[in-house]
Length: 189
Image (cartoon, rainbow, N blue to C red; front, side):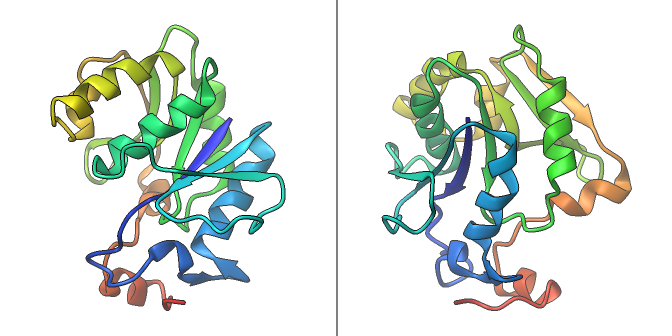
């Protein structure tokens, strides 16, 4: 299963980033198309989802809407039970399918999560990863305790870090502000 996270409020951007125009559609449509060949089932997790917008894609409201990205991942894992889940955010338009396929190939059953290591920032990218369904109780516990920083939950899991080259690091650029959009020459819907 693959889940596209589209739950952000777009506070820094000023509007819903899932609706930002990209290539021939929106960022959300691009992300769904990116993961569709990699999974038997694709879901979109977010605050809003237009029914019927995508063929063969289910939309699910975020079960933990005030828990940020951790809540989105936890919602995706609830839906994936008992399988693993590829997690991808809707706001990383430069991600390429080959990198995601590599991540899936390198995930091992004994590993809780397999994440890309950002070579520029020097830390893992938790919003692009393969998570085992057994991570869910750790995430729910963290949400209940108000520990919403993903890195705190990751510290309690067995995580495999997949190195990528500096040349591939641009694939991990996410869009959060109007300045981010202008650097990629994108506009809101």
